[in-house]
Length: 261
Image (cartoon, rainbow, N blue to C red; front, side):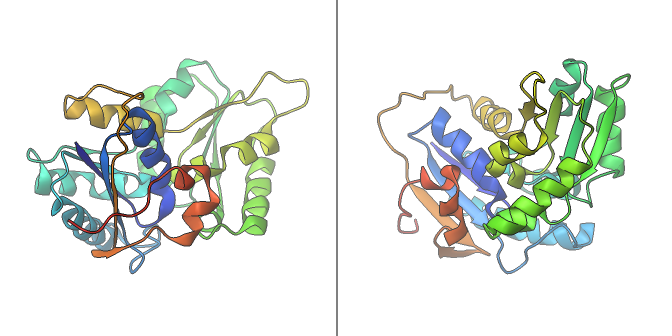
């Protein structure tokens, strides 16, 4: 079994680690776009073009499913990706976990990139799934970029700034950017209030990984004895994981990069 994941950078690590934990035997193809990152500031048309190129590079390796490990790419490029690759390769997008967060009754905060915060896409999800729940949209200036480069000081500053914008009484924080799932505990430490119930942090990685397995008809097998291989593509070229990936537990659990094809 082979599963591909795509993003402009290492935000895909959270979903990659989730797939690895659910199916240690899966061969993984990670397709990144260092030549075109970051995708967030690009126009929707430009981003879609970059995403299609990255997806087609991964598709050449014959995966049974492709995970779009990026909220922004899902917003703008998912229809084009599905039109290009399905039904041969199921394409699974990443959607912020607003629905399960709202089911808890709130109040909740959604941490997302400035481009996503207050976007029609995110507002639509709030209206659809969180009607009647108090929701605070929190723009996290510079956090994704800081995580991408494993810049510890910049991560701390961006998390602290976003925590200042987060109401003290929130019970749940939705992580609306896949990069944020790599620094979950730092976010928890910044937002958790003394003497308050434990803060709930909801990302999308586990749900996305499980959905990919469902789409290809493979059940989770966390005790599978074999370890799958890892192939890394950098703007279509065979390469290695960016060094910053090894600063995170999700990057350190991955195997050594295998020769291409």
